[in-house]
Length: 185
Image (tube, rainbow, N blue to C red; front, side, top):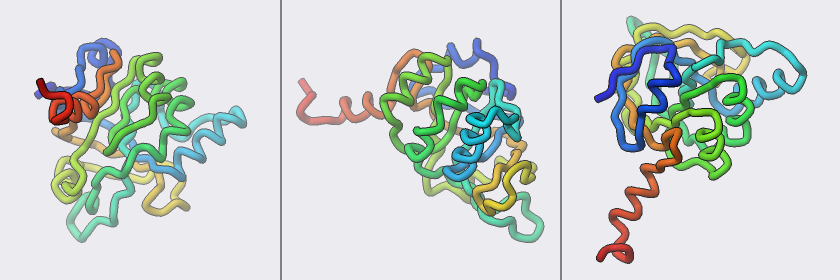
């Protein structure tokens, strides 16, 4: 387990390799499709983004409302490929880490290498468990988007797996190749 505290440093990211397990403590932001679209449109207009993006972590999640006495509702990852059209523009502004589930495009993986970022996978289906690592949550941008608004989360020991690292290693492809009967010797 590799412990990471935000803000993440470039040195930390360069040491991470596909397959590593990380535990994140600090600030992360949520953003899904609609928020990504709004942020990229703001960039195209030359406007300031509503969140700090330098060495920032964005978690692709639309959390459910909190039950009484809870900080947040279920907070499981969403399919990440839907953010691929927007990812490079945000990496250019300093976003270094994204968290979601599922495979990403080749363009996205090339952007990770170019900008020194990593893609982490959270466990799909573990939304209630993941929410236990979230200690504080507040909407900080685009409240009109409801569950897709951008939330600022304070997390403690948020566990994820390095799926793509900044060196171009790909845990998903490695796993498929390892278990593909046609590739066995």
